Length: 349
Image (cartoon, rainbow, N blue to C red):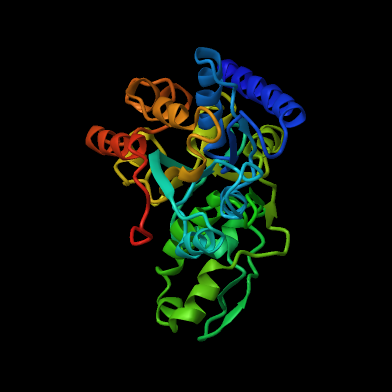
């Protein structure tokens, strides 16, 4: 944890210096934006890259996956980012945005796996919850608990009102905003997964069903806590009445103070996440703007560093800070594609 904090501080200082000293249209520092979940991993790579090569330490900014892809796809030129991190795969609409703005050649790199956890202070009552119960606790609209075939504004105030097996305490969950890839993945895997367990909703027309399944309540039970997952971690340590949603790596870094809920009977362990047994597991990515390779020094070398076995392998230094590696064969193929700067066609999405 101390090493990770030191790396974050090092890159923050380097990034700030680069922002001051480097002209907008003629820079020699790699500019990386995107996911707050991938940010700690990319930061460790950037810090080592800056220390062990002749290239400046890349500048990183945590903007969220959606925000990073929007910046990345805005155009070609050194006023735009070179790389964006994402805790979900690029959407077809984002690929099309890139294409329309001249960002034609994009290299996609899948770096590993992560799980989204529902965590709390170790002093709090831990949850053993199903996806259906989680949906009922956090959805904007739910089936009328009094019966009938209609949806109502979520009436549940306490967890125990959702199910008697859950704690008799107010529902209060801190989580990421809509610009976050963690939020996108949580909605897709947890909210939609739980929604589909409810026959009345599952039988709805597709568009209406999506609207219900993807909407999170806005009455104070769910609190948008910003893009900085560390802030959620800090708040949970001091507030035993709340739960928080963030990536597994942040739990791994704070096992002394935090615990994670069991979801659908599965704990978020490295083994359960890598095998997809844990129901809220997802993949992590970064995207490279090929047109900037050779223009901004060090991009190809940074990619080579990130995709080396000593970095992202089973015994690589990123495993020490919580990255769950891809299977060896998948890593080897991803490394080959990345280092050859193989570009996307859009058909992958």
